[in-house]
Image 1: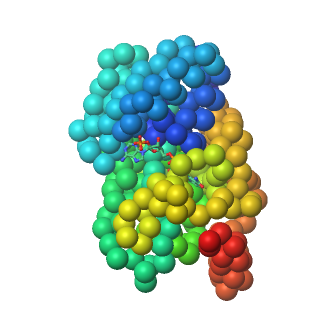
Image 2 (image 1 turned 180 degrees about the vertical axis):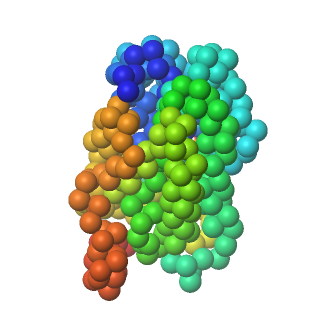
Length: 270
Ligand SMILES: NC(=O)c1ccc[n+]([C@@H]2O[C@H](COP(=O)([O-])OP(=O)(O)OC[C@H]3O[C@@H](n4cnc5c(N)ncnc54)[C@H](OP(=O)(O)O)[C@@H]3O)[C@@H](O)[C@H]2O)c1
């Protein structure tokens, strides 16, 4: 896919990976629709995209947990640009608490509503326009869709849910021309996910957030890899690529994998 004159919708475009993805598609000359709840940061992203070469930008504020907002996003995109070539379902939230320490189990509901149902609702609204253009649905998942990670049980569950849903959709979409790209990033540096993550009290961690992982990759690198994968109409992308071995390790040596993950996450505990 070439991006000049193409319409790309990015949810969660006001921060982190979504903002960087908007920059990537802007550099490639796309028409961009930028969606999130907070208007001010979206405006900043739109201004940056215009400077980087976006053909045009449209801001839509809303919440992916609200089906009517997802439909309004698609309606406004169609009204302004006449179609959708690529829909990037990126908006997401996280948690950082041991399951046993959780005071507020509604954390799980909020994670599923945003990370799973938020993607489903957007995809449902965007499906027909994507079919009309033989477009691409990009699902920003996580390596935690493949392996569970301590302190993230609800987050891992929400990303695992995407896994089965996308696999089923792929079967249904065969022959329709719509392609789905699943993206499995590692920890990312340069996002607000950790400060917005729910703690055991169900509140965002803010200044209590954990330090970044020493093996985190940059949002710039991740966004670049994703844009390349969209251009090539790929179906699966691990960033970095060697994460693709983790599902095999889980299958063949689950105990080794658990020790490895505990070690990786353990040093991030304050
Ligand atoms: N950071 C990592 O280590 C990492 C690793 C693997 C995968 N990922 C995935 O990458 C994606 C982006 O996360 P990020 O790390 O870039 O986090 P981030 O910096 O916190 O950005 C999250 C974005 O989603 C938006 N958002 C959150 N809830 C929303 C809702 N209900 N409706 C609409 N927009 C909403 C936020 O804007 P508003 O708050 O203004 O709505 C923001 O623009 C997520 O799907 C995440 O799971 C992240």
